[in-house]
Image 1 (cartoon, rainbow, N blue to C red):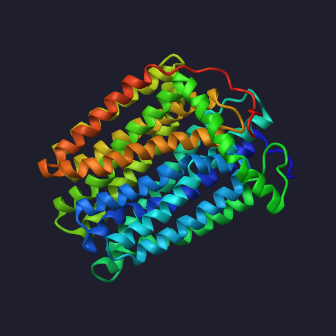
Image 2 (image 1 turned 90 degrees about the horizontal axis):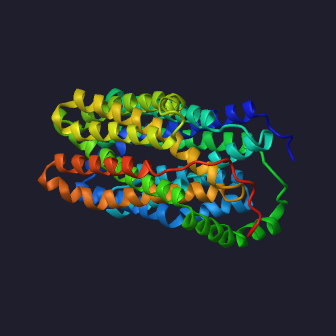
Amino acid sequence: MSPPLSVRSAGRRFVGLTALRWLPVGLSAPVTVLLASARGLSPADIGFVLAVYSAVVLLLELPTGGLADAIGTRPVLVLSGLAGTAGLVALAAADDVWTFVLAESLRGVGRALDSGPLEAWYVDAVRAADAHADVTPGLSRAGAADGAGLCVGAVLGGLLPLLARGTGDDTLVLPVLGAAALTLVSTAAVALLVVPVGPARGSGGAAVRAGVRGVPAVVRDTAVLVSRDRSLRRVLAVSALVGTTLAALELFGPLQVAALTGSRTEGSAVFGVVMAVSFAAAGVGALLAPAARRAARGSAAVGSAVLALLAALAVAAVPLGGPLVLGCLFAVFYVADAAAWPLWKSVLHGRVATGQRATALSASSLALMAGALLGSLVLPRLAGAGTTVGFLAAAGAMVLVAAVSLGLRERAPRPAATSGT
């Protein structure tokens, strides 16, 4: 077994791997919807495809989180990278609704496997080095790295189709192929840098089979914990409502910009810049989380509620102008949302123990995907009345986030869980 990492070393690895993880996501984000549109899918078709992605993640979240808690985070993260790469390759080749469904299903498997293990590994590594260490600053810096990776990727993903020679979807597919290559690089880095934390789990097929058999017990114990803990239930509700809002921005944003510019190619470039600025703003927002908490006199509940209200105002105002106004308001939303996430996560980590952490994070991600699934199915139907209705519905979801956040309560870190594992 590798020697224990220091708090600083664990933080550096977590931040670096987070940036590398989200770089390919940013690369493909500006063109995914536009690629589907260029290949003949309607907004309703695209909403259906995105709903399938959310449904796959929804179904697999808890089992994959339990798998990470049972057999270790590194093998699950490697599997995630391989599934994500396969999904991106399939996306590049997709040419109808069902091949897009296949591609997004593979990407959904990768996302479900990746939804909690890296963060769980970081928190466990920090607690192994110092049981009383505050993980909020590390989560904040990782949020900034998340935003930086997405920002750089979005700039490249938006500009590649504009700079490349070619027409139609021939150029829109280039960022997707680049994202597939970068996902393989990220997977290799995870295999090297995510060292095991805690007691040795054994090795070989027998250990893996024993871990897999333990998944239902891990999921069961975590579900019992969530059912009995009001603040954990509130964190899940927050995740679901934020998921609905993000679905609105991801679906209507690129289509609205393309309509304003009159061209999918130009629209991809403009929306790439919009998303790059938004992701950079998210990085700044994540760094502001500790300051937001101090301004709220140490209350994660009050700080996150105020930030959610600011995000709601930004989303409600999106339909008021052109691409410049949209870009500025997206940036405000991402600043506020990213600053609030470490506060919500600090509540979660204070209320779960090692051995349940990845599963609890998967439960939070499951709720996020459930909200996104609802948004992907319902919001496109509102587009017939204009995108304004969809954006206002998303703003209403953020107002509910603020109300739910006010009831959050924190407590000291829990000891390691032993039952059921």
